[in-house]
Length: 172
Image (cartoon, rainbow, N blue to C red; front, side, top):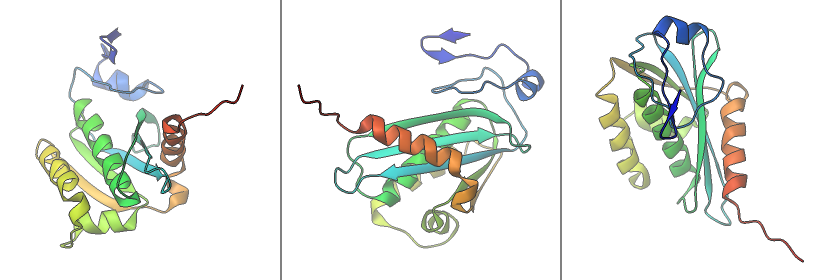
């Protein structure tokens, strides 16, 4: 069911996990799911224009896609900021959908090191703070680095979002 541009599930949690939607953006599920889901995120960044594309996918442990989405921004300061924004959007979407146990997976080692370690980068401190605030509403959250080959679907979403963000010139 779609209400005000948002998909609302009228299925039970068990039914949703058995028959998930193939794609959804700005989703809100009206129930609480308690099993751990995998939250993949990635970004694409154009140094010349400063435009960024962000993509995320939420999957069950068996690999079944539950939700996915993408967005773009006209100005993103760096590739690291784009990666942090993609992760933030993934966590926001997962919590908004009612998931309370997340395993966040990123192919950006620098980002996962920043989150799980004691180092910091001034440019993303605000985004990391937002991630921390959202994390407080969860039962559990963990962050892990994965190779790019394991994150190709989120990468495709991010690149597609970047293309959408790019201006198109047509000569007539």
